Amino acid sequence: MRKLLVLLLLLTAGRAAAFEPIQFLVYGDMPYSMDGKPVLLTDGRSDQQVFDQDLRPMMRDHPAPFIIHAGDLGRPETSCSDADLERHLGYWRGFGKPVFYTIGDNDWIDCIRSVIPGGPKPPLERLARIRELLFSDAALASYQPTRPGWTVRHDVGGLREDTAWSTDNPAFAFLELHIVSSCDGRDTTGKQPCKMVPEPAMDAETKALIEDAAERVRRNLVALREAYAQAEAQHRVMLVIAIQADMFGKPADDAKHPADIWERCKTQLEFKPFCDVLPELAAAFSGSTLLIHGDTSAYCLEELPIPAKAGQKFWRLNAPGDFGEIDADVVTIAAGADGKPNVSVTGLLSDKPPPSSCDQAQYAFKQNGSSPAYPRRR
Image 1 (cartoon, rainbow, N blue to C red):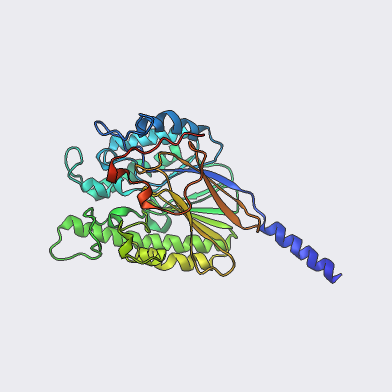
Image 2 (cartoon, rainbow, N blue to C red; image 1 turned 45 degrees about the vertical axis):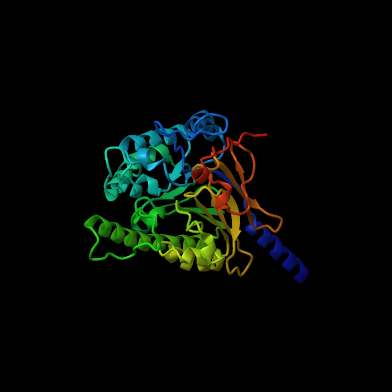
């Protein structure tokens, strides 16, 4: 009788741990082509043409239930305009499935650059326009249609663009946070370390950016902790987090920075608050974590170390785009041989997996002027 009871308990535990796989699409950091400055691929077309002719129809027709956009709608010269925001709205409405967009630095903070047509634009004004045009109730209803069994919450942590959602698959929870490059929205000088607090000699606009960033970090941390707590309470097997910034791949001269990826992140003061807490939150969570970001061209899916207690894993996906791999990704999360979630990724165009480690030198388009490949299926 005792053996039978133990067997029943084991079977019940196994059924409770079982979960259905999920699949979704990821893209971002494209198209970067603009009038007079096309990003030409090895097949002679621009990345805009590949996006229009190949990727958009394939994403529309793919059975994946939703799409994650990992930030940067294009170069700042184009994405810092209302017209470009409306253009991307049209793309997203045409996909016929929910699109979850995390704001990129090209889309607002980099609007302060002198190359912007008509001159620099106040970044916080551009951020306000993004929230108005892309995150209003009417806009969200047009490109992020709800489905039976789904839960979608905006204003997570008090930021309109921070979004938490779940589908009708109860094993997974999703979170998007507004974390960007360019010193996490403080300036675009590219100098390290970033200026983290206002200084007397700063102009009013820079002071406002630093103060806005500090408040955004506070709210993002609230949202992050809440997401992990809810994922644990709801017995999720994985939390998927999407941001724009690559917190791990900069500064570019990694030889001068710690080899440990989390310590390297902490050397960048703008990202230190997140890398101070992410490993511990992930380790305390009984499930695993997938962090998706864009920002740099070092396309990869790699596993990051965390102080795991029961086999939890932490992956990061540096999505395609950014002058590197011009593609979108099909992300599949399914049970591995051990019953725990396993992440696999293939290019929608290439049908190939990304590299298993991020190598900035592998995609050196910006440095040597070479063309990114058109990743045709073979």
